[in-house]
Image 1 (cartoon, rainbow, N blue to C red):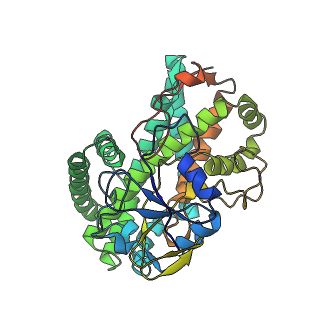
Image 2 (cartoon, rainbow, N blue to C red):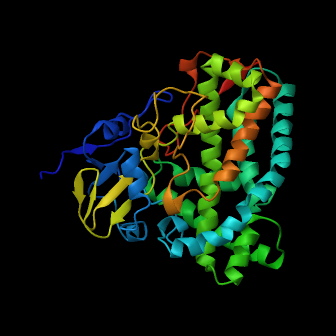
Length: 398
């Protein structure tokens, strides 16, 4: 069978929350297509249909560990996780690395963190209300909430948090030269190494201390611990901040949905699940996988050694699974979305991210039921050249 033509996926600047046409094409194709991204070498297969995405992300014949020392085509100048990160591990090593972190993300612990998160959101909104309208909701709520929430969970001292945010920003952008993002990775790696030494001497009830328990139990090495901490902190802060601000934009440009949440606060958890499904939070895709043997997938033969990208964003719009997939429907049930991934690499912090998202949106609708955009929607500025989409500013009034 002839190989399909390669799509040059440049990830052009998309309008607002528009669905990427390459992802839409992946859903409409009868078979997998090939893509080439701005960095790295060669091309990769792109899986977009729900069935192909869930299979490729749970089949042991598609390996993350095989990415190491491979220069696979990608959006970012450099691979984002450090080499020892859990993102580059396959089972059973992957389970060993996750075990320590999982102890910090039990539902009981998340429930204990919720009141503190509500207090943080209210404190930030108190300041926004005092300063008066108009306000930038990203600067007033989403950015500081994501920074302090994840940093407190991790155990990062308050005086260091802005610096960690700056490192994370240089790592997750596709606009920086490769040497700049690589330098930021080395700096944040060294910082977490020093912080781990401090926590070893003075343990606390935070994620880093739980990881250190795993180190003492032989579940992970110091290098693996630091790589895991860097990945969790970077992705946790950035994803929650940008996804939540995109959700607010989606609601404020659909006043009927905003007012429905104001009138029906019990609908909030279900609405958040639908927003997680619907918001196209990523530019391009995350980490690829390498086929360790020839595998039939999506109507093509993926040869051993070839790379496969799996788009959760595309799969969340698959009409074979979701009726009226492009519609934002708070009554959608069931909702088996893939916003937190699938298979062994399902996000270990999903429950924490859900809780934070529910808290921010719940407090916001309760306190500012008349919230609205302070500028026409076309004047809202958006992040450019970033791996995770979202508004750069969100001017609001009430």
